[in-house]
Length: 205
Image 1 (spheres, rainbow, N blue to C red):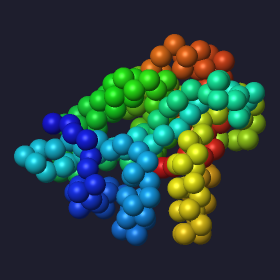
Image 2 (tube, rainbow, N blue to C red; image 1 turned 120 degrees about the vertical axis):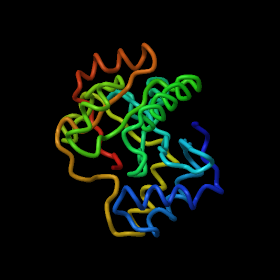
Image 3 (spheres, rainbow, N blue to C red; image 1 turned 180 degrees about the vertical axis):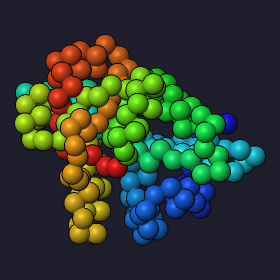
Image 4 (cartoon, one colour; image 1 turned 90 degrees about the horizontal axis):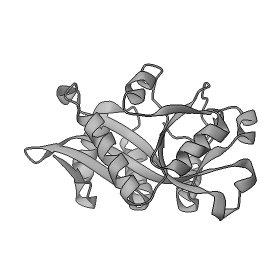
């Protein structure tokens, strides 16, 4: 079953994180204390034990002329740290979590979900869930449109970059570098106008 992630879920969430990602506990603890309060987490639990998870981080879509113009910015969420314990993979939990995230985001008035697949093989996986290649990483893509963080999330990423000495907001990305799931007609129009060449510079893996 799917449920919202709670602050008390730290041990289970870190257990999934440790099994699936290379970051150490210091990184995850900082995210939990500073980033998690700004976002939403979902878990798939079996017999009370969390076996899969994802986070939705607050962001926005914009056109080049809309930078700083709130009326033309579309609320969106970035799907982050989709993970399933190895022993529970192949059962569709991540797909169900992603679909649930889309339903929740749409119900809250968000226009789109965005993400950066962890490797090339995942583009096909997310395409089957309705995601479309929409982002590049090179600066020229910025003339078409962009994804960016909500201010509070941007501040978190800045703090974590300063803390670790790693520029988390700007990691190398091949084009196409990210995908988008439109949740309303505004996002569909944004996709048509940006022609799959929008900029996803501040993307987390």
